[in-house]
Figure 1 (cartoon, one colour):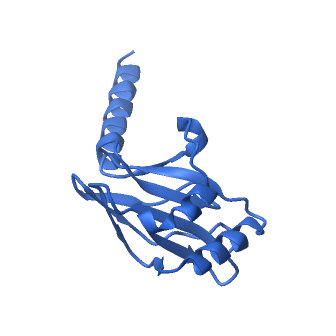
Figure 2: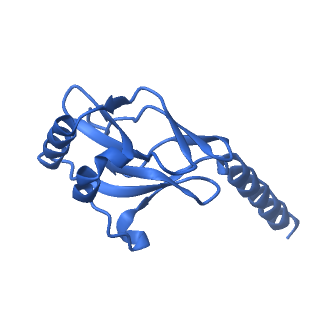
Amino acid sequence: MKTTAIYKVAIAVTLLFFAIGCSNYGKLVKSDDVNDSLSIYTLEKTWEKYTVYYTWTKKAYYALLFDPKEDKQTLVVRRWIQIKDKETLSRVIADMNHHRYRPGMYNMIGPNGHLYGYVYSTTGWIIAKAINDTTLQVYDFPPPPDR
C-alpha cells in the first residue's frame, strides 16, 4: 500500500514538471479542428497581409509559415527563408501539393492561447518557444523521418 502511494506521488511530480517545462511552447492545431475555413489558397490570394517563410530539404519543400503583419503577435524565425513574391509562393505551394506527404493547414497557437500565424506543412509539429508575452521563436523545422 505504501509503495502504491509513493508511485502515485512520483507520477504526479513527473507530470507537474512536464506541464511546467512545456508551458512556454507554442503548438499547432489542425485548422479543421477549430472550424477554420482558412485554406492555403485563401492565404495565397491574400499573401501580402503576411510575412511568409518556407523551409525545405534537398528533396522537397515541406512547410510554409504565414505571420500576419497586422496583429500584435510576433514570430521570430530561425533558418526559414522569406518569400518576397507571389510567383515563388505559388511555386512552393504547387510543389508541396504534388509531393507524397500531403500537407495540411495548421493554426500556430502560443502558450497564452493567442493565434500567432498559420503553417502549411507536411508534418503536424513545429518547435516554437515563447520569448515573451507576444513573441514566439520558431526554430528550424525538422524533416520527415525518411529524409
